Image 1 (cartoon, rainbow, N blue to C red):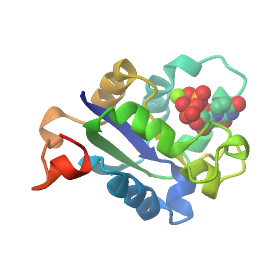
Image 2 (image 1 turned 180 degrees about the vertical axis):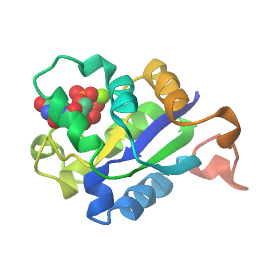
Image 3 (image 1 turned 120 degrees about the horizontal axis):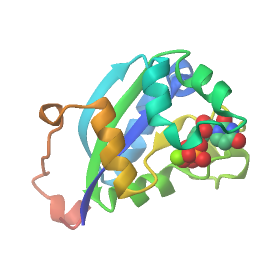
Length: 151
Ligand code: UDP
Ligand code: MG
């Protein structure tokens, strides 16, 4: 099924010049970039985006981190986009993420784990709404889409 997922190149990815690398991996995997903007997340948006983590011991540090620099927010579209992104980004703790994943290739620290990807279709819908208006999101197909994504 065609899905959309929210991806963030987080402050450490922007600071380290890894935004292009993250985009490249998702493009070559076969997902389609449907929306992109740079945004400096404020405390309110951080709290809404990470509402599931309010009250956890790492929450305050997480808000400080995600608001520390601008992020590159994206919507990616394609078959099983949510799980394709989750497997491309790797486990939450980069120290345990598989090599070949974004976190496993570029990270070591759970507090600086480079990327966000929605964890379910339901979260994806909610998170995309927080960052983008529907008119800012473009669904499109490649001429040879069927060879790439099967769609
Ligand atoms: N996080 C952290 N310390 C932890 C757990 C999570 O700093 O012990 C941060 C980390 O940036 C992570 C985010 O909180 O990406 C959201 O956590 P979640 O469990 O949703 O991980 P994700 O879905 O990003 O893999
Ligand atoms: Mg999560």
